[in-house]
Length: 174
Image (cartoon, rainbow, N blue to C red; front, side, top):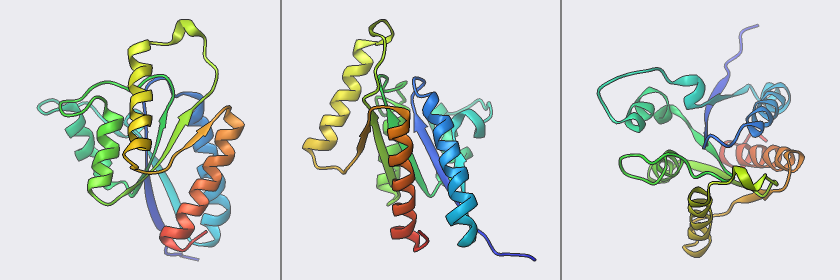
């Protein structure tokens, strides 16, 4: 039987220190698609620069990513830990540019900050300071709400809840 399925593209926006969380995101979205998504004829489709971009010469790299797939995303999941990310032509990081672009285009971003332990030798102090400053900016300028998490299980629970509530509120399919 043929069914009309609505597809929502989700951007995964994060710096290179976010690795284990990616597996959690894929598992949570798979679970959503197999349960709530299936019964509501919805499919969440994850997109990221690691899987959905290809080499191209002739423009600013971040601009290329927006053209290739970011502009087609309906909302984003942004995650910060110890790295803010690589600077772009206009912002301190690609993640920051993606968040601001989504905001300017009235698209939502679900933001997480990791409080997971890390070996001190792996911390780049200037990068960590940028993360802390951005978190403070969100708080002080009342730019929105975010979750923090202390381990991967905590992240999984909060991500499941966030996606379920977001889809229920925005698209009526919780």
